[in-house]
Length: 601
Image (cartoon, rainbow, N blue to C red):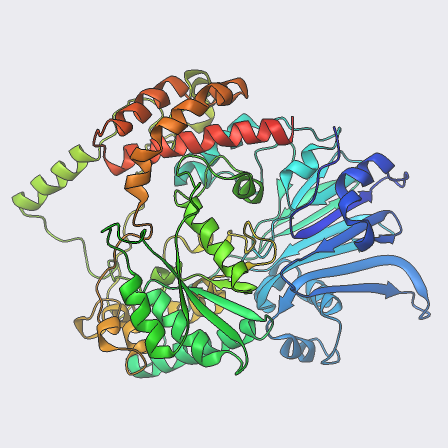
C-alpha cells in the first residue's frame, strides 16, 4: 500500500514493542508527511499536529541523576482548564509542563485522572524501558486516536485510512462493527472501543488504553454517581450556572484568536452568543454564523431571530448557505475523510459550509449549541409520572405510529437498507434476547429529586472537536462535564420552574437579551432547504449508483431498493421521516464505500 497524506490533526506514532528496529516503510506511511514534526526516542517515533493553533506540550523525562536519556516521553495535545489548581494538588510548580502535569495526574489517580483534569485534551505517554504506551483522553473527546498492534509493533493515528495503509493492518472491514455503525442506538452502544477496521481500536472519551508486548488493555473511569440533592434556591442555582458557564467560556476563548458562534436565535445559541460576546477579550474577533435560505426563495429561515441577537450584542452576523455544488446525498471527500464512517449527520453539507465560513472569518473556534437539552434547556419531560391517556390520545398515538411505521420488514434496526447478504451475516450477532425499545424510556422524576444525568450524555462526550477544516475546532460548551455534574444535583423541578418551559436557559438570558428571544418557543428547521434538496438531487444520486456498486457498496447496502426509493422522492412521493432518513442514510453510506475504495483499496 502507498503513502497516505495526513490532513488530520492529532497524534501519529510508531512504537517497537519487541525491541526490533522500526520499519522505514511503516514510518513513511504513518509519519512521512510530518517529517519536520517527528520526535524520535528509544523505540518510538511520534508526531503531533494541530493546525487550529491549539497547544502541543512535550515532556521528555530525565534520568534520576538529572541527565537526559531515559527515552520516556509524554505529549499532551490540547490544554488543561485548571492547571494551576491541579499542580497545587500534586505539589508541583504552578508553571509545570502541562504534559508532565497530566502524566503525574495519571500516576496519582489512574483511570480516574480525566475527572481531575478539566479541559479537552489527549495524552500520550511512552515508557521506553518497559516498551509500554499509555493513551488517555479527557472526559469529552478532543481528538480521535486509533490504535493498531500485532504484538510486536504498534501504530497510532487519528484516521483509519492512515493505519489501513500499513500492510500488517490492512483495510478489511469488521462486518459486525460496520453494520452496527449504521444501526440504531442500541446497536451502536455495543461498539465500545472497536472500529470498522478489523483489529483496530479507538480511544474513547475519558478512557485509557495501555499497550505493551503483553497485550492491549482498556480502562474506563468509575461510573458517575448521582450527587445528593443540593439545598439551593432557583435563583442561587442560576447564579452558579451563570458563573460556571462564563468561567468555562472565558477559559476556552482565551486560547484562540477568532471565534465564530453558530447562531439560530434559539435559546441555546443565543445564550452562547451572549456568553461569548461578554467573556471574550476586548480585542478578540467574534462573528455569528446563521443558516439561511437562498435569497428571494421564500423559504422560511431563522436569520431574522439571529439578526435580532446579533444587533443587540453588537456582533457582526454572516448568513451561511450550502455551497452551490453541495449534495444532500453525497458527502464531500473532505467530510468523509474527517469522519471515516458510513453514518454521519444528515445535514453534513451545512456543517461543512459553517466550517468554511468560520475559516473565512479567521476563526479558530466554532461554538456549537448542541446538547443544551441535557441541562439548562431541558424540556422537563422527565417530571411527573406517565400521564393517563384518553381514548383520543391513544388514537392519536396509533395514528402517529402508522404514519411513521417502517415500509420494510427487513433491517428495521438500521438507518440504512442493508443488503440481504449483509443483514443475514450479522443477524445472529445483532439479535437481542428481548426486543429493544425504539426509543429509550423517558425518565420519571419528582420535582424534588436530583435532576441527575439525561440520556445522551455519554454519546455527546464521544464527539471529537475536529471538523473538516483542520484550522478550526468545534467547541460544545453544553457538554462540559462540570456543567452536567452541577446541574445533576439541582432539583429536577428547576427545569420547569414557575411552570416555564426550559426555565434555566431563559433565566440565564433574562435582562441580557430582548424579551422576544428569551421567551421564544421552538424554532424552525436548522437547514431550511433540506427537503427541497432531497427531491432536486435524487436523480444525481441515482446516476452515481453504478460506480458505488462497482466500489463494493452493494455488498453492504440494497442499492436496488435505494434506486427505487430515490426515484420515488424525485417524483414527489411523500414519505415519513424514518423512511427519508433510511433513503438519505443509504445514499450517504454508498458514497462512503466508493470513497473508501479510492482512498484505501
